[in-house]
Every structure is written in structure tokens, then in C-alpha cells.
Length: 445
Ligand SMILES: Cc1cc2nc3c(=O)[nH]c(=O)nc-3n(C[C@H](O)[C@H](O)[C@H](O)COP(=O)(O)OP(=O)(O)OC[C@H]3O[C@@H](n4cnc5c(N)ncnc54)[C@H](O)[C@@H]3O)c2cc1C
Image (tube, rainbow, N blue to C red; front, side, top):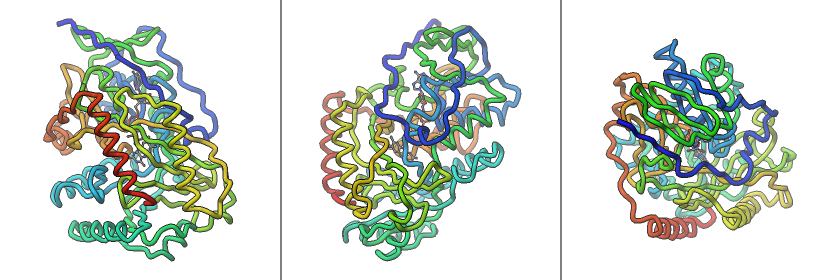
């Protein structure tokens, strides 16, 4: 049966991918400009796509695999996040990140740790620098009494799950971060803090001797063949038996999950290189807000690309998948204020980079990871935990494509489909009013 799927739109992200920009320059892999063949073609070279490639190689070492990315790998959202590879439930729509119940949370933790162990094995095998993958844990910072109470409730939930945690007082938070902003914090040890672009580049370097990689090659069309799919770009094509769409929210640009995916754009800034003595605290830490709609802060040091602070706040639901200069201005001003409140000792520090990136969620917190059609699979919809969940989704898509039934494929296969959203204008209005209210309520968290 003939079938042609055309991409309705291509990715457009505002600002630079700072994590990539602070690394030494890298020459991009050649674009796809010829007609070739592969056993597997993976569209998208982020956490999902490169994890799918690695898992395919583990299971089918002789398979011909090609990864095709619209841009330069690690310049998409993979190089635009805050780098928290979180093992615990991280339900953004809940009050305190806890999931539905203890048994589903335990299952989620098991799956998240599976993804982290997979990433850690890649770090070892490919010799990815240890500074790009640090087992530092993270802290849920609390500035107000209400936030402290939420942290205490979440700590009790973690105790029930048998998950280690520790409450830090204001002094402990100051010693860690150099900031007097926090009243307390909830430390959990299992999060890995990555230099996201460094980690992604490391995966690429480890995989590229064994796979074909094409960068700056937006896929515009998929055409069904008798024995697979033809993946088309402006100047070339790869005919492949199996295709994996690992292109984040742009899965919907190819018609999948239409009207069911929430396209959330997040914004972040990164300072110029700072004097560590002026910052105070320790050299590496990550603070997520105890209120999921608050502000994430992160400190990095020389092995990650300099003594810098990363601030992330503000979310916009944008079904059109593109931010405006007005969004960037508002987000940048908001992040400046959040930074100044936390680090008055750094007044005047320049924000060297400001950017936006794409996060894809579903209303019922499920992913699309598995079969879409004959020979066509997806690894997408990370639900707020893209570094971990997209890694897991990539593993699942590879396993499903090879017909392997595993705990990971079962985990995704057991999920309901993403629920339908109201018509786009209504969904956008409703979601953005809700997000603004939650951000207002999160106040200085
Ligand atoms: C500011 C910010 C902070 C965040 N912080 C965190 C965090 O701390 N922890 C966390 O877990 N997650 C975080 N996230 C989310 C995380 O970055 C994403 O969820 C993650 O990048 C998703 O991985 P992915 O591989 O699914 O998609 P991506 O990383 O977006 O990779 C998809 C790739 O597909 C390519 N592509 C798209 N369309 C096409 C096409 N037509 N043809 C070819 N290629 C195409 C893109 O170029 C891209 O490289 C954050 C996101 C943002 C924006």
C-alpha cells in the first residue's frame, strides 16, 4: 500500500545551545546528499535516537544503522536542557513530583535507573569524560514554609518507597550553593548531573565508527516501500527496512499523536565564566524547585565548560512549536530576576547565553515508544524527564523494532495512548493560563 508522510514543519529553536557552545568546536558529519540503504534509519540524534542506535548495535551488531539529524547533534533540545538525569518520579503536573501511587512510582524508578545504567555503560565503553556524567544527586530547594512542607511530604513518600533522602537546613543549602535564598532542601542521591552536550557528543563519538551519521539533514518525507521506508531529505534519501522516529515533539509534525501532544517550550540562561570565590558554595550542584513550576538552578565548573550558573524558568505551551522574540525577552528578564534574588553577591554578572528548547508531554503522562506502522517505530514524548525517559524510549523502540519483548517494551506497551486535547487554540489558552497561575503560585521557589 502506498503511503507518503510529509513533515508539516521543521524544528526552529531560539538562541544557542549553550552546553554545546561552551565545548570546543566540532566538525559536523556530512549531510545526506546521496541515495543509500540501511537496515535501520533513525530520525533524530538526541537522547532517544542515539540510545536507540546503541541498543540496536548491542542486539544486532552487524546491522547497517543510519542516524539523520535536522541540525547539528547536541544543538537541539539535547544541548539545551539543565542536565538532570533523574531517577525518581518527576511528575511535572503534580504538586511535589510524586506520581500516582507507590507501586507505579517504584516501577518508574526501576525504569529510570535502567536508563541511567544504560547511559553509564555507554560512558564507560566510549570513554566519555567523567565530568560529563557526575553522580552528584540533586536537591529540591525550598524558599518558603509551604515549599518546605511539600519537601517534607515528598520525603515521607520517598521513605515509604525505601528511597534514601536527607533534609538540608538553610545553612546546609548555603554551604552547598553559596545562596542564602533557600530555607531548606531535600537531597536525593540518585540523579546523575550530565553536561548534556558533552554526553551526547560522547555517544556520537562512540557510535560513529559503527554507524552512518548525517547532520544538517532535515527529513521532509517518509515514503513507504515494499520492504520498508524511504527517508527523504532535500538532497538525498536512505531506503531502510525499519525507521525509528526519535524526533521529540516533531513526531506530531509527521502526523503522529496529532492533537494529543503538549508542546512545552522551556527557557534557560547561562552566565559568563564567574570567579568561584564570588559564588561561594561548592563547585557542582543542581537544585530543582520543590514546586514543579518554580526555577531550576545549576552550578558547573571547569570540567563541564567553566564556572557558571544555569537558570531555568518559565514554560509556554506552543502547539505551533516556535517561540517569539517576546517570549525570549520575558523569559530572560524573569531569569535575571530569579538569579539576582538567589545570588545578590553576583550582581552584574552577564548572562552569556539565553535559549529556548522543546519538551513534549502528554496529558496522561504517557510516551509514544514502540510500533507506529509496519517497519515504523517511535521513541518520543518524554514527559518532563527527557534525558532519562527519552533514553528509555530509544531503548524500547530498538528492542521493539527487533522483536525483543523486554521489561522496557512492556513498560511502554502497557501505557494508554496519549489522551486527546481540546482544539489547539483552546488547549493553548487553557494550558498557558494554568501554567501562568502555577508559576505565580510558585513565586520565589
Ligand atoms: C530548558 C530546558 C531544560 C530541560 N531540563 C531537563 C533536565 O534537567 N532533565 C531532563 O531529563 N530533561 C530536561 N529537559 C528536556 C530534555 O531536553 C528533552 O526532553 C530531551 O532533549 C528529549 O530528548 P529527545 O532525544 O527525545 O529529543 P531531542 O533532544 O529534541 O532530539 C530530537 C532530535 O530530532 C531532530 N529532528 C527533529 N525533527 C527532525 C527532522 N524532521 N529530521 C531530522 N531530525 C529531526 C532534532 O534536530 C533533534 O536533534 C529540558 C528541556 C529544556 C528546553
